Image (tube, rainbow, N blue to C red; front, top):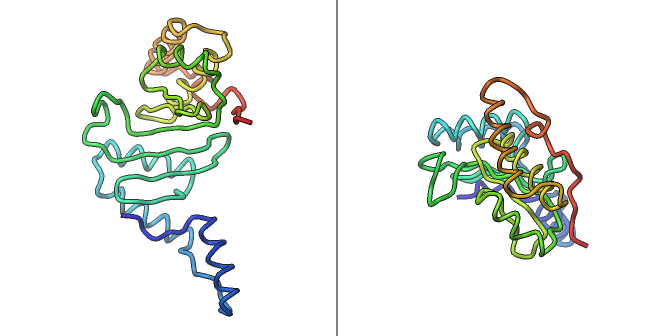
Length: 194
């Protein structure tokens, strides 16, 4: 169920339609605070793990652009095209997919590299048209790690095996309290398809 928050483009269309119809006012959009309260109300019904994931993303990225009963979405934050979090029965594996947080970047993936990316991790996906890469895990930090390693594979800097080894080692160091720039954000500029 969508909470009736028009997208920016729909808002612009409604404003133009109102002006053409002779209406003196544009549609009233919910305030930032109202949208934040709606997001908090939605995640209040989620499982504990998913609610914590969503709260962390709200703290980091602000009010979501889309709010629905099972999913929150942020668009165009920093270098990221889309971040989504949703409530899933188990945050660790559902239908062979791990996680409840997906991070998507614009990235023109060469056809010759798509197989290598698939060999790296089933949680890293390339859009059918090759214009986006998404990573799915339990946090955006792990997604950044996956996306940074995917970029290194696409650039020919690492093989899928080397990237898996780096992923495993970085996760182990993170669990021991060590930080890595690979988990703090994108280490590359997204590469939109032309």
